[in-house]
Image (cartoon, rainbow, N blue to C red; front, side):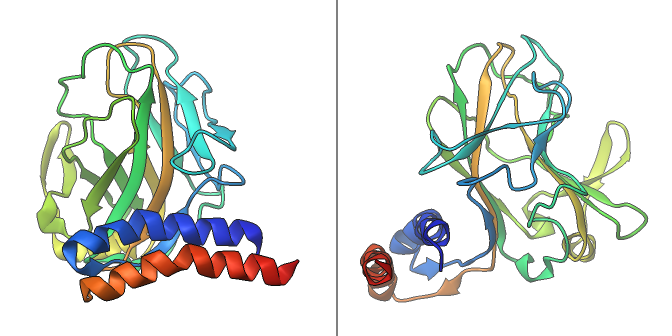
Length: 240
């Protein structure tokens, strides 16, 4: 395990493990982008000031690095952080094992200002697949970001509110089979970047796909989380 890998492990335990202390269930990250060393295959769509790119910063994340993208201006069209094909994001490809689990990420708006958009046609998450002739599914949850990092979770079951687009702007509920097919071949994943009518800067961190929670004794979950930093410290000392 490299030092960077140990940091990613610690962050994964904090992001996924703290939930275990309060819910006696532990969800393991199947794949996790912590942005500690790079953009990890993510960009930003048009509407962000950086065009088709996103700025990687080694500090300022919810521990370690993060992705940053400013709005091009006030009242811009909705833009998204984008793990698009060809950029090498580990969140693309076959992640059928995440079905029944969740998509989770940390998000904040720097210098939060303005009013939240009221346009309900703007989705928080877009998940596209090559399955079923280019299926795209959409999800919107109770996402109201502010100046501090907030942790958001989208359950990966269709009944949680995933939709499919029939003809703009009408949608209908996605089926469980459609969500399973989409997760089996994720071709594009987008996370909404702007939420207010003011010119702001958005930060994305710790985005991952999680398996369905496995029941655990709360004491065991606490022990696993509490001893992880010590285990990493021992490993580092042995490497010296």
